[in-house]
Length: 450
Image (tube, rainbow, N blue to C red; front, side, top):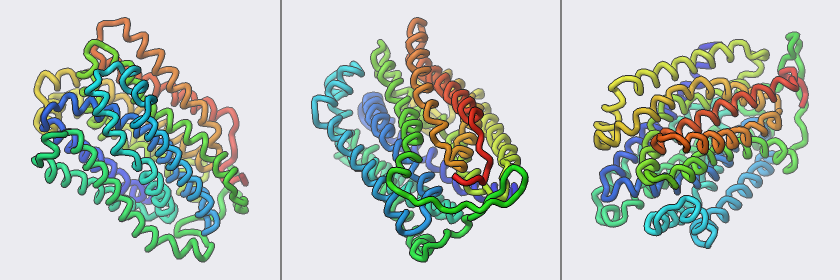
């Protein structure tokens, strides 16, 4: 069982690590263009707003993994995904080309007009990203359902490879030297489009035929076990758009608010006296710190994928705990020792003074795995048991904690990046506590009929 869990998770972990390393290359490229601090700050704001929207559609992977059974359910869920992506496209249009964007970016963030204009231009370039990400995650969920995590891994590695290659190809070009914001935009598109192309190939090769037959994809189990070990057969529920929305809206709200955490923090940090520098520091430390712990989010796929083999979740709990400790130990090694200066100064290419300002935020980030591990396991149980509504309050609780803490810390003489990361950690801890409380209030026997 442990071996099965390991080989299921390994491609996803490798992919996540490669993805985070690719982001370091992109940041390293930005650090070498003209006006690097302004470019990092501008793309940090633009990508923070875009990732808020892509975050709400990224959970379509779990939605398709749990809900899609045949061609009819495929089309039902896909229409919802397309609707989400279209809605987010219109939201980005309003931010990039209407007075709403001027108010949100220039006035709320209190940035100068030149920086605000660069942010809005970047948002205009990124309009289709939420729809592309939504479709990619939707199809990748079907591959996870068939336990073809290798294809998902190949797709993300190909996307990152193209992003990294584009940085080297476009960095010396006159267009990027004149308008540096084009570099991260081009790298983003090269990555997401390549990943989508490989995912579409994998879907057509390994999943599409089983959906046409109306049968289960490879690896899917039609029966579970209750707490007493007795086999329980689950009859598929009729899938309607209303059921899809009821299943998905708690995920969308929770993940959306998680993604909104960064724009909220950017909003408060940008208004400080060291706003531009703090935004640049946050852009670097977000990406670097996410490298050793971001893969823990993939642990939520284990309970729904292995519900028959481990109906009470005992083995998955142990496996998850070990993964969390490995992540924490690796972050301590990277950020509590001089290794951090090698990563920041040599690999990314920032100067020493900038690297010093990144030190405390990175140390705070090293404690994130302790909360993320527990949260991922609980989310996986909620997906397995179709209890996504139980996690809905955790998102607002996280946002509330961030707002409170970032305002309290503003009373102290702390660098803006330190205030931002500390507030984010308080949000993670609060979110995990609320999820644990909600999941404990109404327990459902694993394998019981939804």
